[in-house]
Image (tube, rainbow, N blue to C red; front, side, top):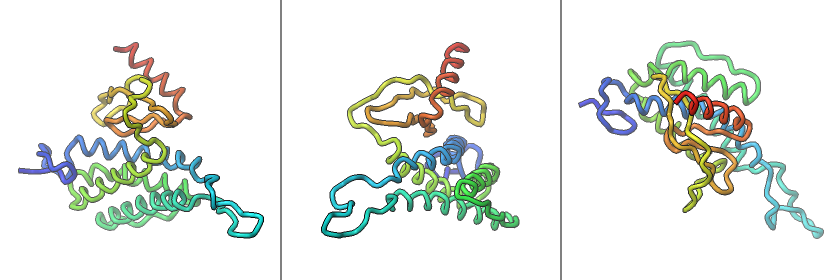
Length: 210
């Protein structure tokens, strides 16, 4: 029996990732640039005791939070490493690095999305790749959109994300108390505040079509 490398469920396609896990991996890759941007407000150090400089001397505060800076670096490095591994496996020439961190991130995401059909069907490392992307998204979401215990939050509407088979996700979207990013609990896509106007337009259009 053919099993998906990520969820260990039967894979009717006989590939490395089942269709559901392939779709979920695509959505996670697509949302990583927005998640990277969503970490920016958390770069500023907090005003916790011990981080400032006292009148008697001491260390000056760091200009940014190192843990958030490191996580952003891990995001870019992880994506670039996986894309490099894919291109090497497929005998493809390595890409020249684009200038700027955002350029590097977008290049890596675009390259992995372009190769995802091959990864899902043929690559023996597909499970490790998809699992690391899932964990990376989960780590970032735990900061930009932490779960709110015992609070369902405000119902925003239904997720308008379109899957590869052109079906709409349709899961209920909620904005929990204290959260600043709407996250679909089903497909994992995130909607930061900058996307809320467009999100409402899509939700209204889907509701009208229904």
